[in-house]
Length: 370
Image (cartoon, rainbow, N blue to C red):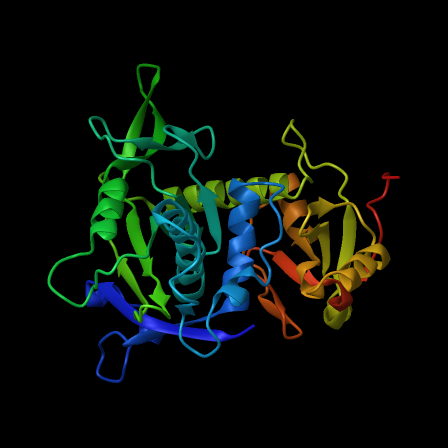
């Protein structure tokens, strides 16, 4: 897929990651995204928040005007205000997740599902007392770093280069500040209490560029914080692992390889990356098609792909088996080797692969499966 550019605004400028700074020290005027990266992030998001959904591949590229800018065809995806708002919200999540992963190094994203969302027995994300805001989208983590994040998408005419903060970013800021990341602490006299811990936030908005009427795209990022005491180094590591385990559990559940009892089940297929055979990197997952997840071997998957207008809409989606083994054995989860597979797909640092069928070696069903 292609690389696309859009205007970049980060508030405050000091929050800009070093690799996005110009020689003057200030933030770059533009930011780019490889649409393959966005598609992989999109599949991670779909698997975690809407399991069994249909294939998104080629959708992003087909909706964009040819060229280098992130410009949607005509007046953007969807007809009518409600549909445009829905597409904006959905794509806003994809691009925000890609921004946080690619430019801030976050590996694991735990999708927050309602108030008092538990990451483990001793860690949760709760709405602050008196707050009426909606819960943010994720708590995300990388080794030594955590953040509460909220994504916004906009198709409105407003710009971010003038005075003030865009309305969707103000809403996202309120959502982040309206929650507490809490740890359960035992009391000396018995019982427990929940103590709030200060966590960095990221509010990320994508305003879509349009072909008609002409409108430039931009990405706006803001970094608020939640209330509470600073995390100790031990608490940081503990919470990072809680987020990582939630991320793997949500992805595995979306792939259909995690049972209702939270134990890993027999998977549909096992596959090895063809150009990484010497490392024996094996993935467990399923074939994903426009009709959803299907239990197909790769020969049948190739036959199906040949019948479709775009064969790339049939792909294998899976998790590195080393990640699943560490998860199952309660071992620390660590970032994996990020790898591009051919010209189309990528293995992320979380171990999630989305790849064309012909780039993988089919190793058949997992032992014990018919």
